[in-house]
Length: 259
Length: 259
Image 1 (cartoon, each protein chain N blue to C red):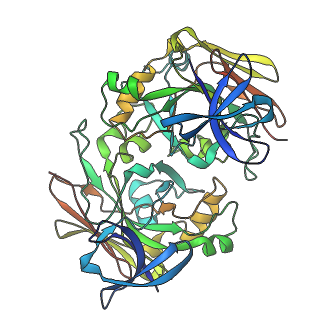
Image 2 (cartoon, rainbow over the protein chains, first blue to last red):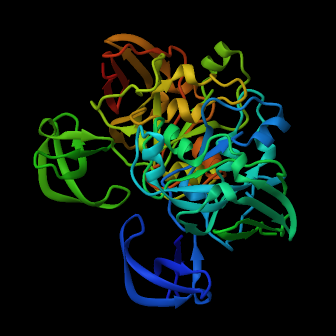
Image 3 (tube, chains in turn purple, brown):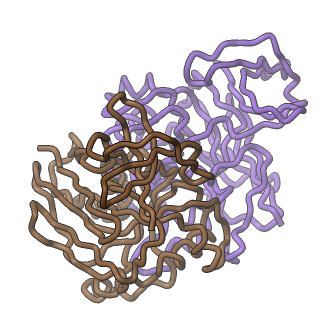
């Protein structure tokens, strides 16, 4: 398992590299993360770096109703095909960046802890096997939602609006390759109190199935992120509160809703 | 009024410039279309160029229910805020490129002729006046839809999926600056037969109102496109049929659904 990060160094330059989780050392790479990255002679202590969102997606595809436990709670049948909305690139922030409340919105803002799939190869119409090979790795996602907008208009569920605000897609802290996702849980805490703790193995569409089926809907390109949907335990974030999304093998993504 | 195009020249290089609609001459520019473009000494006959989509949006925001005539026909109240979905960058094609039927889909594919707003400046939380100044110009849009997917799942309207396929956002043929949109109609023909002919003046949210309100939802960046929604007359395209979307002052956007 390799852990990839993007970062800004003390001089303000943006770089990327591999992180050794035990020693906290980062080996900077050049080239491109998804296309023949090469190690350089430069290494860093991770504590001297500012972590950035680990990739820059051209689109974030966010699933709804992709866990059996949630579909039972909602009393909705499991879907036949991934149900999704698209979040825009400008919604993405990295670890420790602040979630910003939209000035025009005074309602509840919800956290949703999720597994994120990071695409490593351009892929279209892929089989499940081809899709598996197109997955670069996994990250943590907090799919933030201005939940009171979702059903504000009785004629049109505003998925893209309620989830598309700047800073509403938190990604990080890294991308872990070779993660055995079936053995992991998503654990979400709010101000340190556990609110979500669900097994990834309860997923309706596995990561490779998602990539395969979505690649029949649109071409996926390196750096794109699929947020696999959340399960039970979603709640709202008070202004000033911190949300941590943790997945063993990836780490903890921490973001505060700015007061 | 200035008319901007992007093109591929006979040697395969991509460029952009201004088109004189009367003479058919193109003055190539360098720099960036939205940031201090400078005329060069190079000019072309437009017929010697392959037109491309006139911009490369990071996102396409597509409105639903933005014309009074359609809202009356649907018996839906005019919305209080633009209702929208997001179409991904890979869905964009230019004039004369083929719309491709998804291999996995055998149902009806609909055309929707629309006005497209092209953003020229990064804009967030803009007043209507600031929004007006952030509009670079206008283009024609065919907002193609795999219409039978939209309500396939009873629990989730699949707006992003049904409209997000590769080639499902046709843009062009150019971007017209300074267009007096209130005087223009959108005319859509299918195999040369008129199917839509509606006045832009019937819009619920004007272009500047859309840009202002949407800029409170997310940051808009140069090249982003807002598809203003369609009005009455939407229908389906048989495989092999041609759809032309025309707006006086912009021209005609022509695309065939590949047989």
